[in-house]
Image 1 (tube, helix red, strand yellow):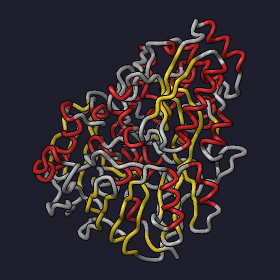
Image 2: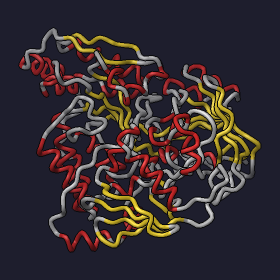
Image 3: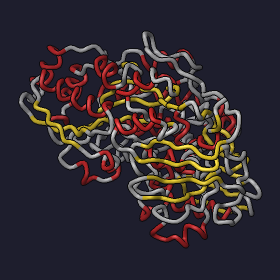
Length: 562
């Protein structure tokens, strides 16, 4: 979905457009489907810690030390204030970092990036187009009511409502009905087999809120009052422009949170966030300014951890009506980009150059042969200025002007925009920078008017599920993040085929074809893989190191450091 960086979009990130087609072998599909979510979970998850790329200046950690006990409260630095906390439009890092502790989904993403039961204690599929969710008993909402199947039907219905502007609506476009089939059972009917839908039930797409609570709040839901969800924390005081508090929910159905309160401080200036971490004004934070990595590592006041991010830094092409319509211009920019320089300066050395829009960790469930095929033969990452200049000349684009958005959110954004400008100047393109305020950066993902006059912008895409299709489906005709309107019927057909394949190996083989197509056509230009960064001072510990914090109640694990 997608900034603290840059998009933060997604995810991760609105849900990408999903298309489907019936599998070639129905019997094989049924057999795969009957294995249920357990199989999806078993094949998910990134490589083991310490498997970062050759020459990398960082090491991935599986987690942070377990806490020794409770804390009264802790303070967390956040790079921007959410415009709303309505989970149906939670498409960026600030919203989801908070909401993951307040609102819960039918399924849950674990810190190890696998799938497990959430508000649904069981998920099953009696046939390829049916998913049945059996709900936990006695789950309390923050408004005091008890969760029923009616609340689930209502909540998923809000996501499906085309008039609700739900960021996740496209993940439901293959859904024909969501019905209550028991007091604590909900059945979802699909038009066609859909390998992605059950996985997205662990994201904000699968959040369940109190029907009565949401209805009572009306248009103010998400901007004031409570959220009527079920998580280990409830929404507390919100001082607009300054901070937001979460209070421990004592009637939580799961493991009690170790902290009585969490205070999120909105610090849009990267230096202010870093200083808050160093001074103890903030106890920790995700999306650490990359320019502060070295300073925080050597500060002695805490520890900077890196974990699996499932994140790639890219240049999002938002306008293909001008020079970028010609693939040769996009290829030229890719050839001229100084990726290595950007990783060192823009990511503080904590990243790896890539020619792939998907991370290697996203392919962890593939066979060795399929993983090799997914990355074999992709365009080079080495710079070739002469070839790039020739491509621009062939396309008749020499001297043409383009605009790339930049922001002071962090140097990962500003330096990538500058790198694109520098690449363009060396190959005959005139690239201008347009500065966007940090709090307005999210609008680039949700408001077409915000993208007017912009041809490209830095985008860090995080996958919301451990499946390469989560990213690759963004280039399907009409997809939510397909801002430039890229369209290719063959690509669409491959997305349909992969989406319909419940069999993991079959799906991933199709996804290798999608990967190669995207690498050749460059609807986005891949730049680097980027791990998750989290800083904790000596007072607290327990926070996950992986990107799971977007949908997992991470704050409930944070407690007193040993």
